[in-house]
Amino acid sequence: MSPHRHRSGFTLVELLVVIGIIGTLVGLLLPAVQAAREAARQSSCTNNLKQWALAMHAHHDATKTFPYALQRNNDVNASGQNQRRSFVVPLWPYLEQLDLYSKYNLKGNYYDKTANVAGGWSNNDLTRVKVPLYYCPSDRPGAIYKSSNALMNDYGNFQARGNYVVNMGPTQPYGATKPPAPFYMMLIANGQSMISYKPYRSKLSDCTDGTSKTLLMSELRFPPNDEVDDMRGCPQMEPWSGYFTAVSSPNSGTDKDANPYAGINVCDGTLDPANLPCSNVGDDMSKKQYVARSRHGGVTASFCDGGVQFITNSIDPGVWAELSTMNSGNTVGSW
Image (cartoon, rainbow, N blue to C red):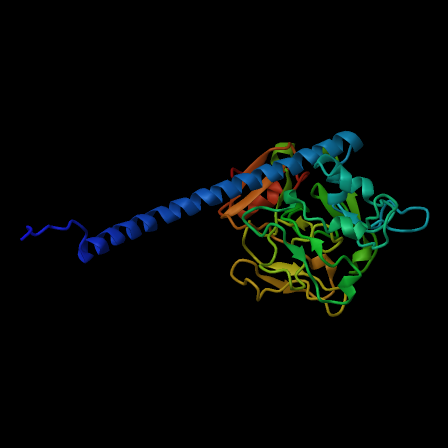
C-alpha cells in the first residue's frame, strides 16, 4: 500500500480571512483613489480656466478691451440686426478654435440656422460644438442644453453647455449705471425686459481696485441631466446664462432666474435641491442671479491679472463680494 499523501491548500476559514483583509484594504484605499482622481480633475479644471484667462488677455491685447459678456443692444449693423452672442465667440481665435471662428457669421445671431458661405455651417451648428475646454471634468463633460420647448428650438436648442463664466459683480447683473465689475449689463431704459439693458465692455485700466484683486471668471454648475429647461451653464445662449454674481459665497445661497417667455422653465430646483437650488422670479430679468458653483468643495476662479486660484466655500461672503468688484475703492480682506 502506498503511503497517504498530505495535500497542501487553504481552508475555508483561511480563504475568508484573506478575502476580509483584501476587502479592508480596498475600503481603505478607495477614498484615497477617489481623492486622487478628484485632485486630477480639479487640476485639469484649473488649467482650463487658465486658458480662458489667457484668451481674455489676448483679446484685450488685440482690441484694448475685454469682450462683452452678452452682446445685444450694441454694435448694431447696417440692417439693424443685434448680432446676439456671448463672450465665447470672440475668444475662439485665442482658444485654438480659429476654425469655428472663421465659419461664424459675425453679422448674425448665435441661434441662426442658415448655413454660412464658409463650409456650409450655420451659427447654430458652430455653437453646438462641444469643445473640451468648455467643461470641468468634475461636472459633466460634453453636456448640452436639450430643450423640449418649441420656442427654444428657435433659440439655440442643443447648445453646448459650459462651466466657465464671467464675473458680473456683487449683486444682480442688470441695472447700475456705473459698472461694478469687468462684465455688466447697464440699464438704458425703464422696465424689466432683457432688451432694456446694454452690455458694458471694460478695460484692464478700469480695475482700479487692482487686477490681482478683481475676479475675471469662475465656475458655474449645470443641472445633472440635459433633458430639462434649466439654462444654467449655457454660456453661449445670450442672455440666459454665461455669468456668475457674487451675491453669495461659492456653492451657497439660491440661484434666481427670470422667465421672459411663457412655457420655459429656466431653472429647476427639484433636480438637485441640496447643491443646485434655484427659484423663478417671473419675468423680471433684473432679479437674475447665479452663484459660482462646482463639484469640488469650492470654486476655481481667475483674476484680471491672469492668475488662477482655488477659492474655498468658507471664504467670507463680504470678501467674495468685494473681490467681484473692480472699482469700489474698499480694502479686500484675506481669503
